[in-house]
Image (cartoon, rainbow, N blue to C red; front, side, top):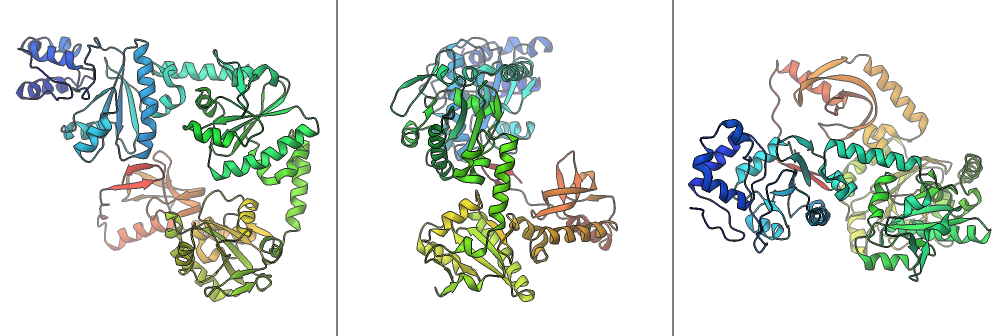
Length: 617
């Protein structure tokens, strides 16, 4: 007798346990819908005595169930790809990816494509699982089956979520474990997600770039126009024969807002002098009201908000950062994938170098060099009556007192976790430098949002600061193009910028990095090179027992033991992308000698946060 199953109910019982053993025994991934599962339960006694090869052609390795309230219509025998979606409701990147996958799921289903998605939850409790799963139109491994969920995590070595494994439901062949990337980049076009299909799409993109036109970049089969902020439709054909800048925008994102404000002035100037130039906004906003608010301030055209070509252009031009302005030539070919850096470096005056040929860029570079040569500490820190910085008690310290010193401009904020973590190190190294060099100071430039936060954070610092409400802060952030905090810019005794990445130098070399000049860095590298002559070329380490570590000359890297930055030399495993500071690697070797091979302690289990992804330690 076929057991009755209501919507949202897991099939269970001894029959399920026996059948599940048979399904997993064959290690065969194939989808069982509720309809088919009931059929298998009913026919199990027959299936159990079939030849193993026959069973392997009909059974799947796991069973799933539908969320409550879903229409339980029979989907037919599956034979397409199976997408294992490993995710959790507490993970913001997972929640951002869910709408994309739902859209793909519904579109493929409407086309009658054979496939299935299965949710493998990483939630901590069943209530969270049910709430999250209730929004999904696909199947799931039951939350109660923790062994099954953990088994999938282990099988696919999941170290971060969201994770999307795409495989052949019939053979179990894994097509890719980069499903999140493929779905985000190609959408339904990626179906059936095979390596052959992905390669085909990449070849199509290459061919499209080789034969690129402004129409192929901006248009679709159903849209041959752009829009103005007044709602007018402007034919894409009107842009033919013009230079076109594609400006990727996100409403409310400070760096983009600042960039578009400068770009608008350049745009108007180029129009004024008769240049054939147009800008097209490519919105990355998911919210239409946010896009409309930012677009209302722009004097140029835009691709309609929500158009799928916006995501395609992100992939097409390999967008890596914001702001980005792609420059298309009069023939429709790409001249430069990002001239935003040029505009940010030179500001409004960059219009004189348009369209940024190598000759004109050389002229701009010479002007920038001359401007930098005239830079002084006063030109950076004095603006009208604002000719001072402040000390701990709020006393005003004239900028003139800092002239002739090496000054670090410290961009930071209390609300920033990395800033709070970095501060103790900076204080320690500051005190070391001050013991030997009185001609050294730091000026704190805060990004805090209120006075109490500023005061609390500043109270932990032994140096000077600009007041919280100070117009000079915006000028300095723009001048040094500060995109992230904490950040340290080193100004030399003459007022010239000697390093825009003094933080990295300080993290690598400590107080020895003073005065942060190129000459000093070269001296430190020579010292390391001399020391390296006495280090072993290869060694083994307890943290990486799989392979030997090889001493290699490196650029900047992160040490996998102490998690601090390093440079110049590393003990490295290229195969595993594993690096150790020589001091960490050699300390382990010395410890091993002293303790006669005593095993190192095992690292504790757990998770670490790296940007947007939660990874197993």
